Image (cartoon, rainbow, N blue to C red; front, side, top):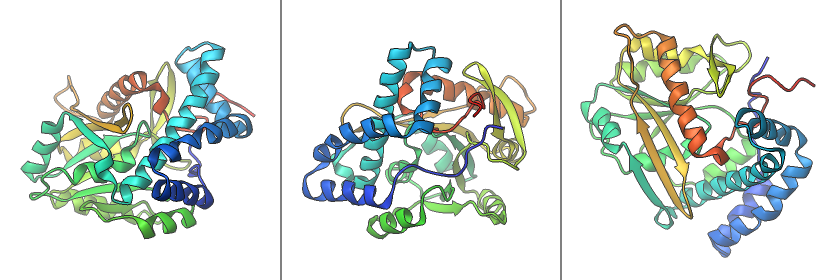
Length: 296
């Protein structure tokens, strides 16, 4: 059964090395060490290399040679996004350019003050959403980012100790499911919730839908919530562009039905996510057997 195991790549030492380079030698110097880091992961991180190769070779239909090259480039770009996120948290946001495609859609939900649900994915860098939203007018509503305990506690404690604050609030996913009450309270208070809804975890209810040509399990909760609450829905993706540029895409669902069901929301989510994956294939950051096709 394909599922995410809740583990993120990276170590406290790795973050400290990045931070040292960023603070003392600059961003470009920090990027330069990724030439070796990406090569190391390509050769020695067998499980993630295997799953990434499958993605490029089987799902995107790339040749064997191009797939290997894409895996290496993917590791490199992933490293860049980690460095960028760390640099931005240090207050170096002015080193980056942030553009918006669909900004008016996002601002409209914030202005209405009636709440909303924004879907994202582990495609691109949704984790820096909080820095994008600092540029929006959030006078009329609060914005909550739903996050999981993906990273090692040491990484979170260290990065958190040096990070600058933002106006965005956080809802932490808990084993006791208390986050469900927080989400309902936020929606009832007219606030906006943002979450990545592309990873299924063992034990939760799910919906299935074809994604890049093969069926995938998705956690049903976010889609049921969106259908039940009948709040405005957006699909948001934050993608790294060339150099130090990031692009935020906000897309509205195109429902043909008058009565919206969870499956309708999922269908639109998959459609928009597929478009973004094909546009930015090197920014697929799901390093596990996503399609449950790699039996060991």
